[in-house]
Length: 133
Image (cartoon, rainbow, N blue to C red; front, side, top):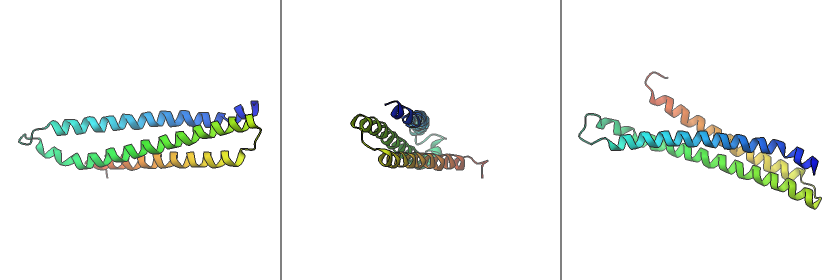
């Protein structure tokens, strides 16, 4: 059992990273939603009504961020399954190395997808600013 606990250390750190990353993503979504609510509150006849043209792009960025959250959560699910598999196999005295390797690879793949999706949203945010290329 001590060997399994030692092997579960890396997935435990991965779960911590996924949790922190998900928190960052949700914070970004909240800021985007707040910005969207402010734009929606602008009256159509107001001098700032032209700012509402940014709403479709903002909705697209929110969609990117929710996709990133979904990828991160799926990564966390596979990492959790990995820890459960490791302990279950230790109790049953069954080999689990191949299954653990597959689950960890899948978890890392989804984590990578979440980071790439965040990167795409950050690039979109930078394009919104006039002084960035």
